Length: 179
Image 1 (tube, rainbow, N blue to C red):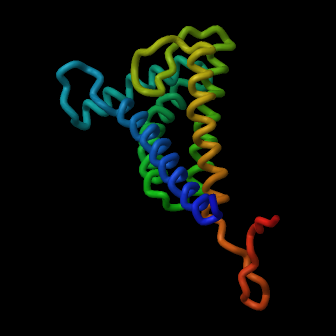
Image 2: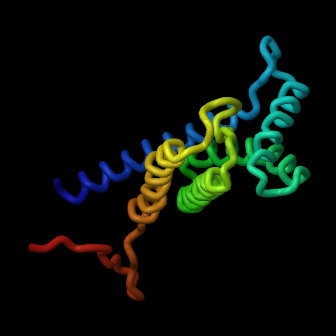
Image 3: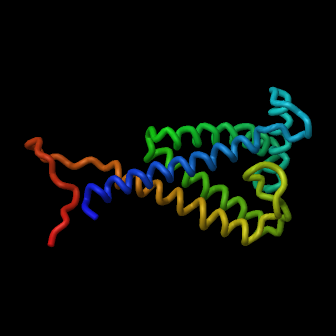
């Protein structure tokens, strides 16, 4: 495979990775905002109810005060929505991929902290319900989401790298293959 084919493959994988991670954040946001009561349609009050339910889930982690948990619960779904759209757009990919990696690390840390302290709570990552946090859930997130986001960060810095130019205006090759 020549350098041009590798670069094209890298760009395709980068697009697939950023869209996949973006969709994960969009689904996470949607699951926290969707109406939680059966038969309830989308409205401002249904979103407020969903956010109040999510605030109870955030508070169950016992990491911050109830007021701070409520603030996090009201901000986090919209942060995930914006981050998901930002990742899928590909604009400022280096920054959005770094932010997504930091967010995933923070989520995994919160899960680990709750599990280590013996709390029997569900993740709340994709809405209400689900199994209690345990090694299986942390491994799932750690082995699926984190490598994807790290690959996206690395890829965004490698694939989008522009050739360096010398002081004379000539392009200096980034890497040479030799033999």
